[in-house]
Amino acid sequence: MLWARAHAFALQLSAVHILVLNVGSSSLKFQLVDTDGDAIAAARDRRLARGQIERIGGEAIITLAAGTAPPTTSSEPIADLAGAVSYILRWLAQARDGEPAPITRLADIGAVGHRVVHGGERFKASTLVTDEVRRKLEALIDLAPLHNSHNLRGIDAARAALGADIPQVAVFDTAFHHSLPEHAYLYALPYQLYRRYGVRRYGFHGTSHRYVAYRYRELTGTPREQVKIVTLHLGNGASACAIVDGESVDTSMGFTPLEGLVMGTRSGDLDPAILDFVSVKEGLVLRDIETMLNKQSGLLGISGLTADMRELLAEEKENGDRRARLAVDVFCYRVKKYLGAYLAAMNGADAIVFAGGIGENSPEIRARICANLDWLGIAIDEGKNASAVGTEGRIDADGARVAAWVIPTDEELLIARDTWRVVTGAPLP
Image 1: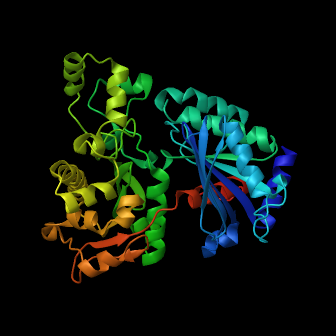
Image 2: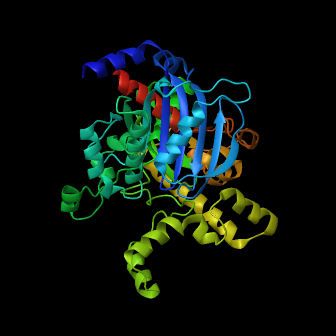
């Protein structure tokens, strides 16, 4: 305990190298961020390195970049996650092309922040990972078996590589949505299913929605308690979030990330009776159905071509592919429905904010979603929209009652900042 207090005090005195890890089933994304209280207040955090390792367990694809240098890609056999973490740490300590290494020794890393998908009802904020916390996270694996088990493996791999003295922090996708009111998170199922097993809406992408709401406040000078916006995180995974008084009051993902908007390979909302019907007709067991809904549906399932929105837009434009156009239309229509529903539930909003790979980089998708919503006060300026690609910017037309923004998300930065706050005892926002 005395060591922990001394370590926290030491971290408060100078900028801290925070290693951010986001672990998937066969992938590892990372960033090394230099930050402290002054850097956070002035938005002067420094990204020292970033990258990802994909296809862990075989011939891995490794993409790495130090500082502002362009990324380099290579391949190398990496057997497991522990090997991937060790590879990253070795790379971070190597000088390249006369440039100093991001770190000179492992002890330069002051803390590790982990994206953890599911915190259940227990974890309402980012949390220092102790042995007790780790046991509680294990108990939540049933709620997110496709994600939490891998997140825990990342925590274990980081501890094995860096030692037990380096603090680790879990930053939860679900935490931002703990402010959902009961009428928004409950399903109309027998109530005992919620009491016994926690069957309810949890929501995900919370780090993204929270970061985007924060940047909106910074860009507009709006106090937190006056923020009334709809955020749209549109990427391979996609979700919408209604934010009132700076807090999440509804979100499209539910008990799992499968519910809600159409996504790259996920179906989003559907009639649950379809599951039994299809299982009988196709001779599928529940696991097969779950795989179909998560891996073979969405944009890929409708188009039969790809889950990549860029490729679908190109097929539609260049080849007139009917199913590519249909997939895009269904995607945009579902977003528009949720946007309208949230504006009704919120009694209007001051702005809508686009984020995520599609939301940040596709003016065409943004325009389709906002088309014919002028009666709600939503109108997009064609020129502003076209120029806002991967950059922050306001895209609504002059005179529109509801502002429209593009704000690229930065979940890793939020994780790094929360990690510093938790380790040093600074208050979480």
